[in-house]
Length: 388
Figure 1 (spheres, rainbow, N blue to C red):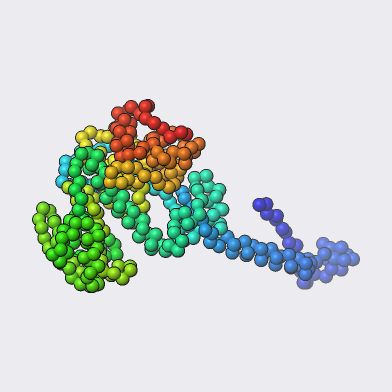
Figure 2: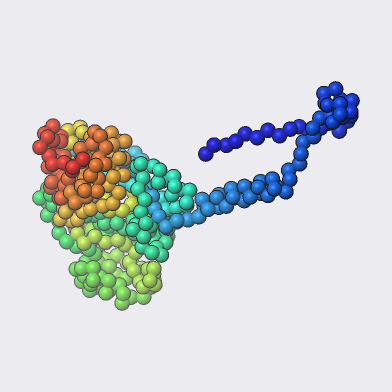
């Protein structure tokens, strides 16, 4: 928009005599400045009102969310000085290069709706995609509920990645009710949680003397208790059978709970994932690859920087995710030359693959592993590619 410059005349000096002022016309003197008439005042007021209305409209919320490239994290690297993935109980081997998980930054979630001004700004950004908010968040979902769901998805993806990686290496993973997290492991832990006795890695075997071998049986035993009641929970910890006291707490629905997150697998090795600022399920494939790399001799990447995305299940099947275009752009900015993408999502980025990035479609963890190994050996020419 062009802005016009306006100059106003200075007011006449009150001590000047128009009839004798040599600077003015002897007959009329200097022409005095006119005060704005009714029409000018009306136009000026209308303009100010229009500006105020436009400013107000720009702050109105809209039912859209904006997706843009988010941070990239190397699963072979460190977080706050600690390894992102650490493994104890099996020999590990040095790694090199990078196996980057990619993320998407979202504006317009339940806690901070997108405004008209933000929508227009996002619309003009080539790297940003706009979606209806209900495509990402269920109707009526609160910010706390969205955060809790994202955290649960991340925990699930980590557990599935551990199981898939071990199975890819031929390591048997028995089923069992394993404690993946407790309230004491979280930032909002209450004081009593640390004294309840359950620890990460415990395998729950009984409640008050009744054996439990699946989630349904465990829930039935806990549901029969009262909120605040102390239960005798049998666990297997470090090859030792113990009974620990656990006081139930109230869940969101008011029913009693143990206050733990469970995995249905009994991992034969301790694998810890530290990644505080990422939620959702789509890092599973890259977590699994990093675990495989650490547990196998040699440097799987050959020093290359390889990025990727995709959820994973315990059987090693790679699942589809969202925001693939933004993740590829984030990987390009981080310097990755290769990107492992869920094969089913190749059409999403047709014609939008940035120069210098090779998109390799994968359907399973085994395919992803073979692709990384081929890249590491310098034999990527025969790998499949998503159409550019």
